[in-house]
Length: 361
Image (cartoon, rainbow, N blue to C red; front, side, top):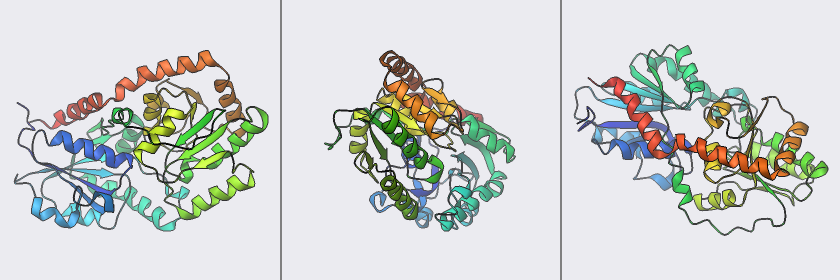
């Protein structure tokens, strides 16, 4: 018997959208919580494809837990004008799962409304703290933010990844380049992920090292102005024939790119975890990454880690060296297979439940 048996724990998230790493984790957590009691996911903003599966916060009263002192799991990665007013009227205590909040300065030039919501999310940590009995963090990097914000009980163990499911999908048919290596980067087309730096490094790569290489930037483009700037940059560099910027793609398309890629690159300046690193390991892709945010912690030695301020020329040289070194790539694949064991769905579920044990009566 567990103290969770028969207990209802609902989750609250600002936005639920398909293909989003936090949404995927929230759904995995819901499946786990439902083995003990009732659990629903409520969102301030629900993507059309998830209507009915994820509920609007306006539907909460029809599903309110029967417990006099219920627990509600609130995920924080972005602010919303509806979030704090909604949470303030919920009975009981909160568990906060903190997925980090990207500094708003990255978004202000491209999308001021999004920058405002990021600031709102950062400010929400203080009013949520006083009702929070347990704070979960995706990484030690994130946990430090929570402790700095005064959260007394912080545990690492907020994400349930389930990346193994990707291996079971039938990959989509792609018109992928043939005859040369494919360098892949996966993530939403956001400024802090530095796709511009990856493009500059790729330009160096094909100019000085591997003219047969191709680059794929896979992920949703939710900032139209920034996406247009990236597209224009591709054209200015003369790379239109060698670069694919996918925009939103299905899981089957994502799997196809993972299966085709020869090297995975991360150039982010800020990451609270970086799920695509684990996905790349799942598909045995050698990794080159800049050491910023939680990237070194997530990578765990399973890739080539370069300094966080590494520029395009040096990054291109490292990428070329890895592409040209078969034994090195084999060693990186082996390290990735070992590292990914720490992030299987089973391992993530175990960490999550162990964290919740701090609340056992």
